[in-house]
Amino acid sequence: MASQDASVRSESTRWARWLIFWTALGLAFAAQVFLAGRRFGQPSDTWGQAIRMSLPDWYVWGLFALLIARLKQRVPIDAVSWGYNFAFHVAASLLVALAHFAISAPLQTLLQLVAGEPRHISTYFFARA
Image (cartoon, rainbow, N blue to C red):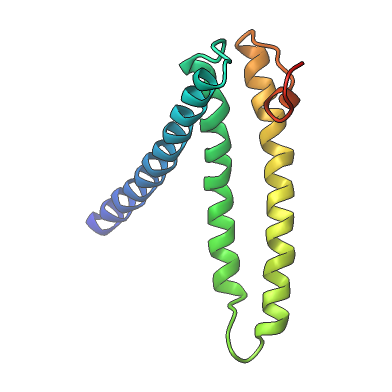
């Protein structure tokens, strides 16, 4: 019984550390978005908007990091089959990047709509006239 309690505590500690790590990354990038908005004349970007833009993006990367770690264990790049496994990892990285964009862009748009800030994602990539 004590062994199960220790296992549950260990697992919850691991998830708490995971959440803290990806939250810290998200907040660091939110600060960057906020300060860049101020610097480049987009004062409409508030701290809350910067957080809504950054945190979900980094949480998605955090989930993908679990998948990537599993792929690394299952398909290691070693001296025996490095060519095939390297090609596998290149293809997998492209798929993960595409999946990240396919999840993050609609998620950020949804969060902006819920917050009452309808703003198309293209405004972050293209200069306004």
